[in-house]
Length: 100
Image (cartoon, rainbow, N blue to C red; front, side):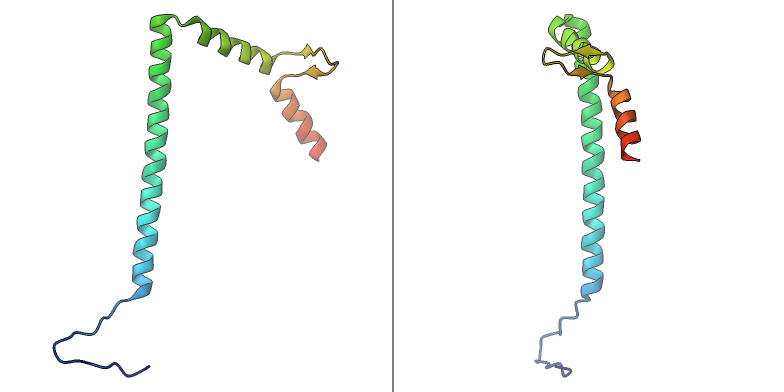
């Protein structure tokens, strides 16, 4: 396969596959970064709009739900089945200690 056949009027194809793969890889990375940046910007904008709408309308259910969730993550309570709920920070400390 070392000999390249030439036909009159046809130029040989000289494609460097290494360069082609580098261009495709770089393009893929650029697209991935742009998608991540776009997602983060849209999530930030969504949170801003959600906060603004909540403040304007005084949507009580959202505020109540968020406060209830925060209290469950931060407080100590005994469940009806006899188990205990502890703050998430404390649970992570105990898990990290047990893993060592």
